Length: 186
Image 1: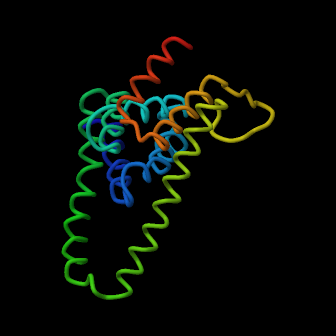
Image 2 (image 1 turned 180 degrees about the horizontal axis):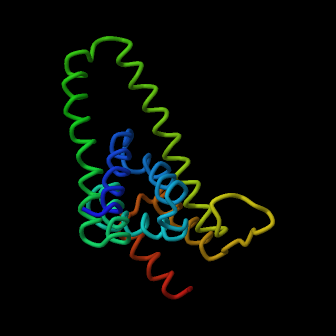
């Protein structure tokens, strides 16, 4: 096993350990490791992989691990990253299931879950705001010096949000329609 493949396994094993709150909540942690800590991808490449991961069947973290591993080290990298993301979560889930099944009626255990739930919402909001900024202004932060507003992306985002919230349209239909609109606009 090459050193790069082993690093992919270890990094995604750590990410899997902290996948509390599901796939969307873990996006900032994956970004921190893959983009900032190891410089394996640029922020734009990472955003593209997140977008593709959301469009493909399966859990977000597994899809993201597979794409990042494949990009960096081919099939062995994809297998290592995917196994790393799955193993820790599986063992952690089995252990927590047994723990919460035994102690679910204790107030302090219920309060821990409430705290984790609130933290998960914050992580999801952070990931969403980062992706929105990259799509709308082309950067992961609001820097007024490099601010270029993508009007087309703002319109597609606004229309999609309106259709999903007001008319409860099927998200697949919205994705197909915005894909067609993107093909025409860009």
